[in-house]
Image: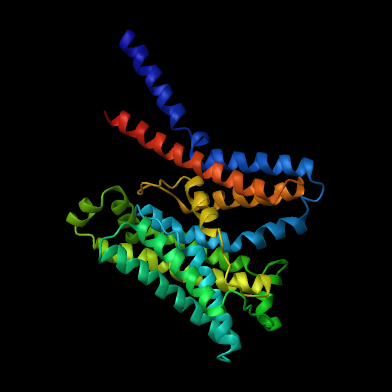
Length: 333
């Protein structure tokens, strides 16, 4: 009798813990709704369609970087250089267009190529020399930003882009911000890669145990290199959109974006240890941070508060990731 009652209680407890309402994404969606309701109550213009479009427009670049970092972190890696690479690609794009007189869309395509090259630099040091991703990308963070400042001498700014290009960041398509379709396509492509392909399964396997994946016949080096090159390409795309939105390219473009992107990925449920995560969780993380940043402005709070709360969210998400890993290990025992 006691065994039956205990088994029944265990079953109920297991159902409760595995309830879809307690999944990370569901809880994050609830937080997002509460955020929206609160800021809508304190800011008279927060809930307007115009402000909603403004949130989408200003979060597109960070959203792309967060999508790019999801496969990176799934493999157990990290890329701190995406914001600096965005800045370097923006500068090189502007220089090719203004000084080398390339057509603006050819210069934009070249920016994606520069991004891929930057990602390949990270990939070479990480996969060929077996250096820690944290150290490598910390070094390239400074390298890419330094190159951008060297090209511009710290003062040169590229402006005067044609209206057809500026429409990419400032215009609308079917009433929606023009850059939103690019973010949507990027989200679909990364989602399919992570959740519906052999690549995604191999990235998770590498994140769980790289040596085990290698013994299972997975080409670990090539698969890890791919995520860093992919992150570089998307950083180049984000640079083009960033330049079109602001109408200028400066050496400090994308400063601090890596913090927002990493926070969005980890807040969305991707484990910093690798192996666990989802693209839809990342998108919810991006939305939560974008609503928070915009809502604080409408609540007339200093901009510094947004940075403080983003850092706090990152620490909370990291702590939650560690606690979840420890809880999983205890259950296996």
